[in-house]
Amino acid sequence: MKQLLSAFIILGACVHLSAAKHVDGMIGLKGHLPRQRDIDHFMKNQVQSNNFTTSDALKKIRANRAADIKDSFLHAWKAYRKYAYGSDEINPLTLEPVTTRNGWGATLIDSLDTIHIMGLDEEFKEATDKVREINFDKNDGEPSKVFETNIRYIGGLISAYELSNDKIFLKQATALADIMLEAFDTPTGIPWQMWDVQTGTGSSEAGPSTLNNLAEIGTYQLEFFRLSQLTQDPVYHKAAQRVYDVMLDRNVPKKGATYSVPGLYPIFIDIKSGKFLSGKPNLGGGSDSFYEYLIKTWALSGYQLQRSLDMWKESMKGIKKYIVSKGSDKRMYMGIGDDEGLDSISDTFTCFFPGTLALASRLLNDSDSMDLAHDLLLSSYNTFARMPTHIGPENFGFLPDGDDDSDLLATQRSEIKKYGFYLDRPYYLMRPEVIESIFYFYRITGDEKYADWIWEIWQGIKANCAVEGGFAGLRDVRLGREGGLIGKQESFVFAETFKYLYLAFTEPNVISLDDYVFSTEGHPFKRSFSFNGTF
Image 1: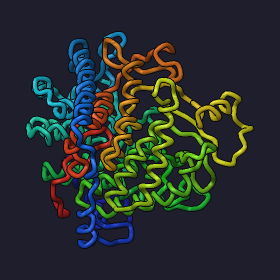
Image 2: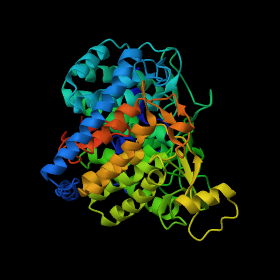
Image 3: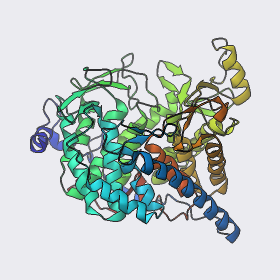
């Protein structure tokens, strides 16, 4: 199957432009290769600050905070190990094992690099032995998301390999990637959304249709690029880059059409035709990591994948013009928009963007983007800071500056007056995006106030979400624990939330942003691997 898919990708069936031009993404949107002088310039740009406070008193505070977060991680890990070890998740309220991601142990694998970074040697060794036992040819018999399999399993295994040099992780990552390549065997090479390992059949979340979304076709490029580097096999990278080939070839922006603004892509796409179907552009769920991976894969490639950079720059023009909007509280928000207007609704997923934009600003030495990133961080942090729990909601809305509020409910108008935004979905599922962006700002600026923001959020999480089985979700962030808990603890709690919390209080050279690129699941990949256009 792998050989057949490789041949299919190279032939580039039904794509008008030559496969050679798009084989690896090094040719930019204007038909040029990256210039060596530009690469040399980018290499000089430093991401992390050199101005961290180093007083003995502050070092002690930071060490104590890191230890506190590590202890809580261990609390959650020990509950998982006791009641659900090897299962995908544990229900932190009932202490029951839960199967959500093929049954291969999503929490186990997603947690590996966090365990390693925290120096938990015994736990890492035990988890490594468990990974050796996994057979990816068998699962729970249910189709699951290809995208989630990539970011949680393949990404987690690659990062564990890079940190530990234990080849079992690379072996298992390759074995699983070879299985998941079958999901890319479609008329266009755009992957199925859902894949059944047992039957070898694809589907979408909505059933047998051929629908997928932007994030779930554009969040393979980072992991598959690195896997091709590690295995010296281009098939993974080619499969991921072919998604861009087809998407760009089959869709031309046109005013009044579904895709109307260059670089602002609709959410839903048909994997058979490669055409966008619907879904107004935004930076939230269903779109978020597509944009994230443009700039991060470019950085991981040593600035060689020119097309990814060009796509990022094109997208940024549209985002600044149509997605970003000033609210009635004078803060800058991220909505849903294109050249036909803005919907002033947002979600916690969008809150990844200030951190990614800040990273991009340092990679590109772009001070204007850093200023915008800071403005967007303030509104993202505000969704947490204004709540009595110091924890923000899943979805929220805002009133664009100068707009009339007559269409809003009375409760929404009241909350906008009180908080600057209104809560649309008030629950919290331990998502990391706000913490992640604040972490980036701390590492990039060295300003201790950002570490204090993270500590404030962590105090809210501990007070409201800690339970016997780890950390539960909140039904209403306005009410906290008293409003009810949600028996859900996804693997990203271990992979992302705890990792960013912990790294905000370690020494800054631990997983430095100048040495690593984080995947969308919080898995650090080394930036030191060289790439010259071949594998």
